[in-house]
Image 1 (cartoon, rainbow, N blue to C red):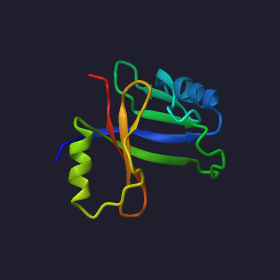
Image 2: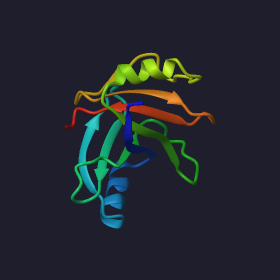
Image 3: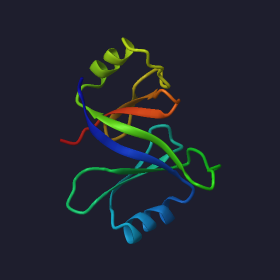
Image 4: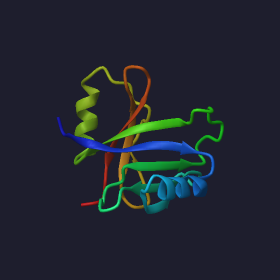
Length: 130
């Protein structure tokens, strides 16, 4: 198995700037960057803790503004070195894929979503970070 670690948690937000302010000013995270998704609709904000080069939290704006009062975790992402190899491995197991194709972000990172046993969204994520 080539899943290396939990890459990040994707959290859907209504107001990206307010959420960035909260997670930086209240929680103490640092904004690592913002990225317009390749679909032209979603904006991502990537946050991590000081001293870390990792993205631990991905704020997702524009996906769904109808959030329940308790908020909405969109997905858990798992880091992989070889996305195609992990997809091929999972296709041999009783796993349902959400995506039919790999998505490539403007920064070159790639991902594919699949479902956990209760329908939760899980992501295989191949980063361009070294």
